[in-house]
Image 1 (cartoon, rainbow, N blue to C red):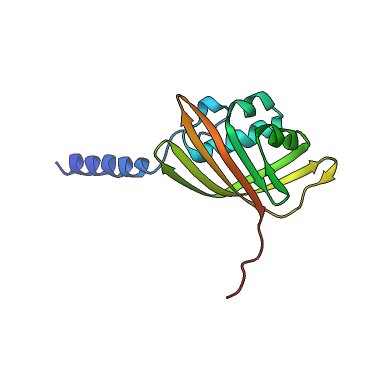
Image 2 (cartoon, helix red, strand yellow):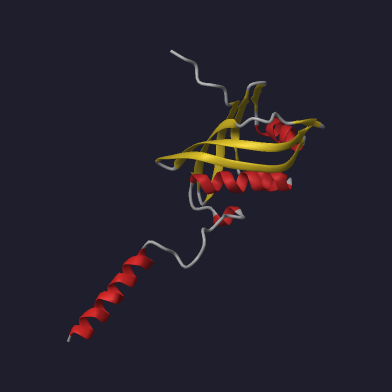
Length: 156
């Protein structure tokens, strides 16, 4: 009887240990069809910008899309023209905050992008970004995107 109890306890202990693990690694989205939430929308967007898949990017911009940067405000066509000037060597995304509001995500995060724009090196520091994504039928489109350099917090 004690052998059955100890075997049962061992099985229970193993099951508890496996509950915190997954057999499969983290799923990283590689296409719009792999999107599972706000963070994955941003990851696919950046992957497509780096790959220069402008048709794929354009499909996921709303007709009234607005892109805000320290240098100005741009519509979808102007934003794509700016992104076409990018030569992205590498990028990292982090500090995600995703808020779901009805059929929209508001995604904020930091990004560090290495590369060039119009032949000039990109600034070395991170940027803060915010994108508003809206679900339209079975597709997600960006309605607005904003970027700004990270600056030291002002002292009060």
